[in-house]
Amino acid sequence: MAKTIYNILHAEDNDLSYETSQNAIKEYFKDTQFKFVFNRAKDGNEVYRYLISSEERVEILLLDLDMPNWNGFDTAKDIARKYPDIPIIIISAYAENPLFIEKLEEFKRNKIICGYYNLHPCEKWCKKLYSLVNEREVSILHISDIHIGEFYAFNNSTVKIDTLFKNLIQKIQPLDLLVVSGDISSTGIKEDFKEAMKFFEKMKSISGLEHDRFIIVPGNHDFIWDCNIKSCFDNYISFINNFQQGGESKVFKYFPNEENIGNNLDSMTDYKNNITDKLFTLAAYDEIKTLVIGINSISTNKETYRYGIISENQLINIQTALNKLLPYYNDYFKIATFHHNIFEVPCLLDEKWKPALINQGMTLKCLFRNDVRVIFHGHSHYAAAYKFLPYYFDGDKNISNSPGYIIASGTFSGKRASPMQFFFSVNHLKYKINLKKQVSSGILDQYSLKLDNNVWLKSKSIDLDF
Image 1 (cartoon, one colour):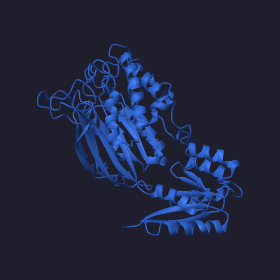
Image 2 (tube, rainbow, N blue to C red):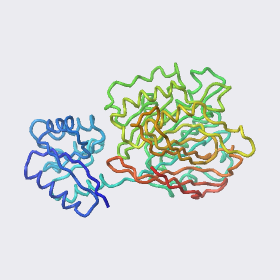
Image 3 (spheres, rainbow, N blue to C red):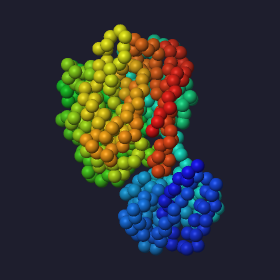
Image 4 (tube, rainbow, N blue to C red):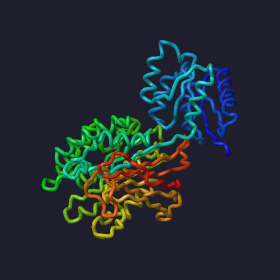
């Protein structure tokens, strides 16, 4: 097996401690596929000089607490803010000092550091280092078209959502993210979203995910037709704000490391002036090295609403935000989601039932130019997976031509099932990613369920070539 090489920067002013840590790592990893290149800084200032001047990317920072000039606490806090993708491990004789435990725990809780350890015994922090460099399996559940309200299929059923969802989670846990590609409600009314709040809180409790681990985009059933365009999404927006518990700036553009972006992103206080082009979400998850782009595909034009559209202006807004994020998250695994189907659905009874998304070419070009590897959507109530092989756009040879996948989910619980599909379905995506953001494998499992049944069964499994 080929060695995977990682570049370690160790901030340690004591020569003996630095030599001891090197030898400990070499010994611990001697029979593994991992190899390390060591670089040294003697204080926080030298850490910065190395990060700024070196052509080699630092994958891991080992940090002493007691150093001249800038100490470990100040260095860790600032590095975590400016270089959020570099994991920091504290190795110090003060790591178990009662005077510092509370602050170290706070740093760990706020994800400034991955952990803190005494130099001896070395096995403890070497084990942590191993968990960082080893591949991490990412688990994402994709559901769509819940249709809470009038079109919810289980309104008069003996099957309860608790039983339904618990059975599914038991089969796929642990879970990192839950992607919901629209049509949360049936008619976009307040009562639908009031029930949706209860529904999502139950899903949160059963899955063990926090609110920010839910990526939600609107569907064509999530807004009100017979009202002013500036207020037609109010019920959906209120639901999202209340569930995500972050207000508008945290809903439409929220980042776990938003403070690192600075004040470059525009305020969303005027989102209603052009609402359909501003209902998008960007979320970065550092521990799974994944960036998710949530896009609005809803047209408020009654003549084109069946098609859905992702406007050029929205794509420009998304690209502008991505340009400011990519210095931090450029090599993260990227996923996009919106509601409408990109391709026409192969439907025997009515060929015009779910027409394709308008502006699909520009949308795919924007996403694949930004190295999006998976696109989740719903709307068609028809489960499918397509492999997409992009070629160079505009002769730009720097653009990745890695394969991507367009993945559709059937309805999670809507009455309006596809004529070709008489069951409910969800998608479960798994892939492995390491600290260098290299993806080694992917699997897409489809689970299906029949009405008035409470057992989800795996119906298909596809190997994905990333």
